[in-house]
Structures are given as C-alpha cells and as structure tokens.
Image (cartoon, rainbow, N blue to C red; front, top):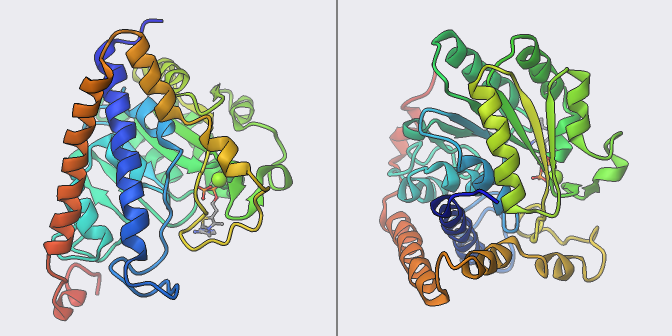
Amino acid sequence: MGIPEDKLLWMYDTMFKSRYYEETMERVYMEGKSPFNIGAGLVPGEMHLSTGQEPAAAGICAHLTDEDTVMSPHRPHHHAIAKGVDLKRMTAEIFGKESGLGKGKGGHMHLFDPAVKFSCSGIVAAGMPQAVGTALAAKKRKSDAVSVAFIGEGATNAGAFHEALNMAALWKLPFIVVVEDNNYGISVPKDVATSVETNDVRSSAYGIAGEKVTNNDPIAMYEASERTVERARAGEGPTIIEIETYRYLGHFQGDPELYREDGEVEALRKKDPIAGLKQYVIDQGFVTESELDEREDVIKSEVDQAYQFARGSEYPVSEAALEDVFV
Ligand SMILES: Cc1ncc(C[n+]2csc(CCOP(=O)(O)OP(=O)(O)O)c2C)c(N)n1
Ligand SMILES: [Mg+2]
C-alpha cells in the first residue's frame, strides 16, 4: 500500500476538521430556534450537514491544488474544508455576516472562494455544466488543471448530469464527477429513484472511465482519485467516481427522518471512517495516539476561532442589499 504518510495524515486531519466543524454547526444552528423555527436563530434557513461523508472530499482533494476547480452542491462544507476554503470567511458567510465570502448574501449553499477555485450551489446538478466549463477553460489554456463536480446520487438523474458528461466525454476534458451515494435524495431511497445499482456504470454510456468505492473507505477513495486525476491531467478525459457513503444526520437539520429504519444510523456510525483511519495511521506507526490528540486540539482551536470570528462579525447594512447585484 503506497500512500505517503503525509497524505494519510492530511486526510485524517481534513476529515477530523470537517467532522468537528459539522458537529459544532449542528449545535450552533439550533441556537435561538426552539421551538423549532427554521427562519430563526444565528443561522436562519436550511442547513445540510455532511457528517459521515468526509472520505469523498478528503480522498480526492488530497490530489488537487489551488489551480484545480471544485463545484459542490447544497451539502458543501466537507468539500470546502478539503479544498482549503478560508474557514473564517466561510463561517461568517453561513452566519450571514458582511465579513463572509459573499458579504453574507449567499449563505451555506452559496459559498464562493476564488482563491482556491471553490464554488457551490443549491440547485441540484448545477455544478456539473459549470465544472465542464472550467475544464474546457483549462484545456484551452493548455494548463494541467482538473475540474471536479461533487453531486449526490439523487442528482445523477437530472438532465444536467447527462448533458455535462456528454460534452466532457466528447471534448475529452479534464473533468471528474464524484457521486456521493448516501442512499437518499431527501427522503427517497436510491432503489426507487435510480435505474442502475451504481453510477460508475453510467460511464459506459459516454465511453469514459468509471470507479466505484465501497464502504465509505477513505483509502480506496484516495487510490481511485489518484488514478482518476492522473488520467485527467494526462489528457485522457473524464471519470465518474461513485463512493458509497453515509449521511448520519437528516437531509436537513430538523428533518424528522421518518424514512429511516430503526437502528440504521447507529449501524452506520459503527463503521465510522474517521475512527477507522485513526486506527490505521496509529497501527502503521505513523503517529501515536497522543500525537494525534495534539493535532486534533490544534484543529479544534482553528475551527473554534472561525466560529468566534463569525459571531463577532457585523451584519451587512441594509443598503448593501443593492450592491453587487445586476440591475
Ligand atoms: C434543480 C433542483 N431540484 C430540486 C431541488 C430540491 N432538492 C434539494 S436537495 C435534493 C435531493 C438531493 O439528493 P442527492 O443528490 O442524493 O444529494 P444529498 O442531499 O443526498 O446529498 C432535492 C431534490 C433543488 N435544490 N434543485
Ligand atoms: Mg443522496
């Protein structure tokens, strides 16, 4: 197994940071919302958390640089963190503060950080054609940058998914789609919505490569991503990577989750990828448990500071609603 030690530790740190960020958001989001009122509190509006889905983001972003583009959907925090989005300004954006990435106008589903070429959208599958566009730009500029669109398995049935893949395949673009199969599109299980069992096989319809990662495995995701990014950088065209992943929380915070089977989430949590990777890096002798504790403390402090920054920032003045808009 040839994954360099520094990459494995980066993946562990990144997955841990993402988990701690989302667990903090889970608490902060409920502040001021009792009895539950989605429009009240510090973070008004819908909130889609990615707790449990960290391997998808860390496994591929381990191979990306600031020159590569990531387009993410409505569940974007783990991708943003793995791509290196400014954590303070991202959190301020989610809080609707003027120090946010979009001056507080976009919120949690519309995070945009040009410094690391990251963007997301609440419109399902919208990132597909956008990422094909940035892949085309990279090819025209003769750079070796790649473009990654993350989408959920539910979004693979949207027209934009297929239209984008057709073009990316036709033009052999450095385009990668990572399908996060968490088995649900809101409350609808995959087997009643999707005609194929796994989405990697849809690659054959476009004559491109397909990769399937099972068991939410960060190491397998790293390896599949390594092959995929190498192919894309070498001009060998697009790939669909599907990863079987687990959403521990509701579709949105406040979701009654009536569609779940009893004990479903408890069973998923027993297979936690962060606990698994932690054991692996310790067993390999890369790091001791107490060294990992120290790394985790540093990460927690960075995340806590981001939340403090967001809390301490000002709301935009009302006149700002008329700035940066098309008239
Ligand atoms: C074009 C469009 N249609 C419908 C919605 C409403 N919607 C938001 S999330 C979602 C389901 C997405 O499921 P999936 O792609 O599996 O992503 P997950 O939520 O599981 O991460 C839907 C239908 C939307 N945001 N955009
Ligand atoms: Mg889904």
